[in-house]
Length: 533
Ligand code: FE
Ligand code: CA
Image (tube, rainbow, N blue to C red; front, top):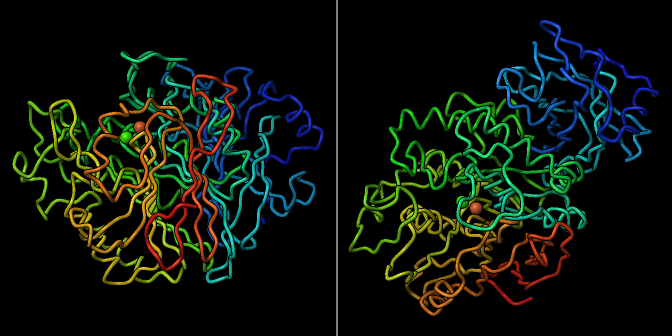
């Protein structure tokens, strides 16, 4: 066990905790380089704490030192200056932090905006732990983490949630608050965790603080800091371990690989992507070795196994994409509707949403999985959706409909290898969907090989209901669609049954909104497809 350089006294810890966000940071942190210190008297742990990337013997604990979280000076991110900083951490077996099982130290790296990614190993499997960070006469709030069950261990039930699309300007994060209150064992963030742009057309309830579209490292950092100051999101991270992937708005609307929606030079756009990925890393509880960004490259796809019950493949649906089909003016670079006649390129088998390396990784993982359920957690709608919209008709080029050959390869693989109980979770559409995933969506006799649930947005405004709902008869594999409500998905998983509750807030523009269940669906073990619960 490593002793921390700063071993806070009980008095200091209590004072820090009693300060409730008002602790002073006058004393310097222990610095590895030049004397680093908080430049003002703000709480260095203002952005809270998070745990994620669980393993059977550990997890990643995250914080970021930011006494001035929305500091606009790019030379002093979060109001910090100087070299790397060492902080202490404590891990306990109980929520009151009486039974401390580990004390250690971790580095808040100057190069990564003084974020901490403490990769903890050597703990007991399948149980919760509590933790806090200490330093500079202050202590963070207490967070809850959890290890995965031992490989193959019998697990009878699991509750988790999934969430996507939290536009800060469009609403409050009441959905995050109610998700926390359900005490899930973990939460999946499926993308659009932040929004890079500034809303110009729709009503807003609060504004992105800097008033400019994020496109540089300081502006992306500012966005994450502002979102993490939201009390509902901050509490969700403190109380519920997170598994994370991204969608487009962590970088730019509808980007694909190195191709921007705005037809930028790909080499220039990759500089923007590098800044965005770096800021994502700095604010998420992801593995420091696997996920540390390398310029515009960052690995976020990963796999998590909960004993014998479920294996979760978290996918990256953006970084490795082929260019969107028919990427040229007068189309937008991103979403447009195309038919086979208007855009035969869409059908090209040489195109991939996941990239061929990630496709192989996914297929191999599904083939080897011993779990009763196999959850494929990713960013966008997988089912085909034939649409007629504003005189246009066809398929979206930005969802899996833009990459039908990749979708067919995956569904064919699940079918041939008899992958057990494959369920897809997604976001991006700001709508609820419950779908049967058929080998051939245009043939109602084609076998259903997997089940899909798409969660609506936490707060982002939904697309117009009528034109999409009108197309439901053209999409008989879609059991349910609703774009007018905001919320999250709660899943109760048992060996024989998956129950999916579509949870909705009363009003996303009300910070005190209450919660209810819009619809409940189920999947029965051994029988792919949506059933009414
Ligand atoms: Fe979104
Ligand atoms: Ca999106």
